[in-house]
Amino acid sequence: MKTIISEKERWEKAAVEYSKKVENKESQGFLIREKCLNPYLFESLGNVSGKKILDYGCGDGWLAGELKQKGAKVKGGDISKKFIDIAKQKNPGIEFKVIDETTLFNDNEFDIVVCNIVLHITKNYKQVLNEIYRITKPNGRAIITIMHPSYYKAEIADFSKKEEKLKIKVEETVPVIYYRRAPEIYEEAFDKTGFKIIKKQECIAKEVISPELKKYSEKPFFLLYELKKWIKYAASAIIYDNKGNVLIAKRSPTKFPFPNVWSLPSTSFKEGKDPQKVLRNALIRKLGI
Image 1 (cartoon, helix red, strand yellow):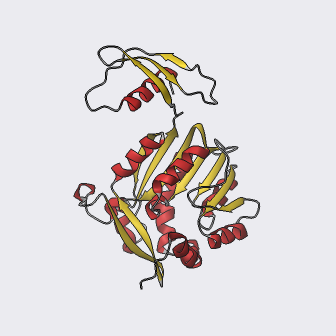
Image 2: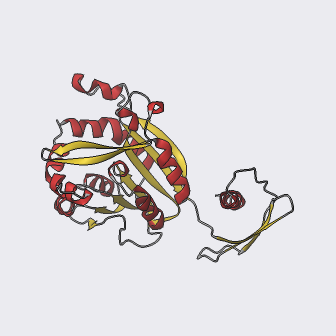
Image 3: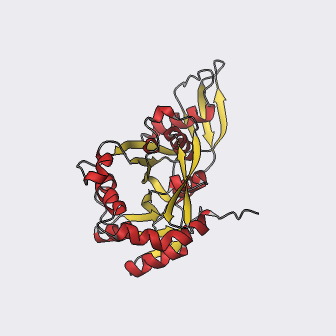
């Protein structure tokens, strides 16, 4: 009978080898990260001094360490206890926790949540996004990076499957699972979770790293999303006119200090439109966020 290895078990076995590979400054993994990803990642993060940031899927803690040096109030979490042990050894003074799709952090705790090279190795990516939403402050940001799905095929438009599993060796005896998903799968999930896409950027090396790694300056290896957290509204009553336009929406109470009843300008529904989504967008426009 074939033994099924969970994501957590795979990364527990791969953690030490992976950490050694990416901390070697002459290794391919380190150079790709430094030249292809980090310039775009830190540009999107901007000035992090004084910001409360979670490194979600922190691995060996290298990013959390960088953010602390830049003045951020940073915490980290990862599915692998071995990764967390390595992160604590490398970064004393930073709080790291073993997490899964849930984090044990507070609602609305962080100004920014960074989920760096995580979603494409996560089966339950929707649960991860819901958790990131929960712990991000209203109007806070999430920075999401994934391996570019076109890295495995010539064109994004060539997708024959919206999602497929790929086994990639990180540690010689334990291949980890990568989920190659079409970008629109993530983008639809961002929207349903309550995030707005502020920026979508393909990350390509701006210089030739080495003759062996020339391809990384010719096509993107990573894809970065900068997201903003919308405030969710649970509508408990919607009043329409005889043409199907929203006149008044009453929403369920929340902790946010906004009135429970909004008088909205008529918002026409086109056939096939989701009324709840139209209502949410109308409320967002009214708030100006």
